[in-house]
Image 1 (cartoon, rainbow, N blue to C red):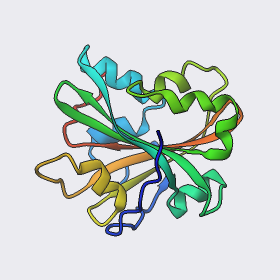
Image 2 (image 1 turned 90 degrees about the vertical axis):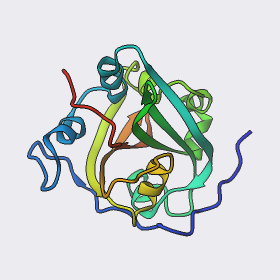
Image 3 (image 1 turned 135 degrees about the vertical axis):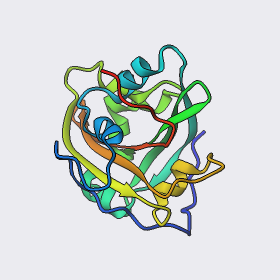
Length: 193
């Protein structure tokens, strides 16, 4: 059963997103830049680097509204309802990635409806198994405690970092737009290709 989630009144600001560049942004470590700029499936990369101890923890899946920047990318307008899915990708006991996916409700009547029943299955498995899935846009951002996404991503940590980095990707899946935010947590190791 899906329920409407109340907006978090603190830390509602959005980070400043910028188009992904192969040049490393100031302040991004080479380790994190490798993850941000990887063009393959993040799920597959995490699984390959985790060596069999991968799992998905479903934090929340509910109706919600997009942040203004998310709504602009989805072209859904600020009051458009979305299915908002938040998960953490774990390797063993360590969370490596926090992901927030937005699927406009108007798209859930079609083929994208199958995405509502993923549970603990990774979204990347579905998106990258469909040859028609396309990346329309990739942006990256420095995310600090004043941003709402920071609070959601680091809620499970006993000690919060000063900054985390994330990317958001606008996908076209079966003709519909889906937005995926992926925030890289302190435990994520160097990307092994």
